[in-house]
Image 1 (cartoon, rainbow, N blue to C red):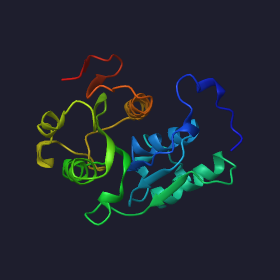
Image 2: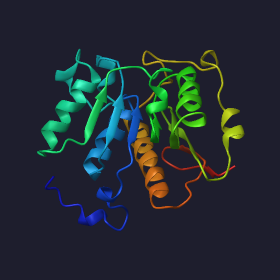
Image 3: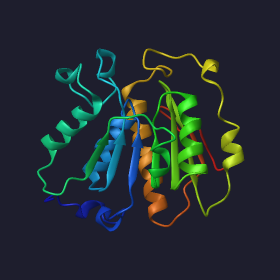
Amino acid sequence: MITDYTKQMELIKPWEHKRRINVLGCGAAGSWVVFFLLKMGFENIHVYDFDTIEEHNIPNQMFKESQIGCTKLDSIVNIYNDFFNEENKRLTIHNTKITEDNAHALKDIVLCCVDSMTARKFIYENCYKYGQAELFIELRLSIWGAYVYTLYKNGKDWTEKYEDTLYADEETEVSACGVSQTALPAAVNAASIMIMKMIVWLRGEDPQHRLEYSIPDIYAITNE
């Protein structure tokens, strides 16, 4: 890897952090999360998704029109190879759902960018609450902004409050992607926030448990 990362060294030195980073879902936010992690120099990135790219994905996801019909994971690998010339590959793809068979293998960091509440609850319980993940960051994206929830072990126990936010899929109106309407500004902002919360935790500090924001202004920030 020949990229010069000196301008971000006061924030993070990615080569000092070897923890496994699991990105679950490679859609409106997840595709940008993966791309930004790679651009910042993080290693040991594992991405889980099983979808193909459709036309309605192009306006808010990090894919090209020429990749419509391809799997998201093959496409993210192609983009990675286009951007970086390096011998030691930092990206591993898993074209599969998160199941009881593989959930407990997702140790260290889980960045949850999936579409449904059912999937969020399953991932939370099997990867974090009863699993090996030490840091769990979960995103709920809308056209105007997002909710970002952060839980981490050996910190303040926020599990009960988080579990109160897990409602049924039937309670929210969904689009063709399985989530409420989304647009590029909200997706890119949310991806950046998730990564910054991960960085705060990697620096040994305590990230806030709950962030709610709306573009163009952040209107609520709270730990409780």
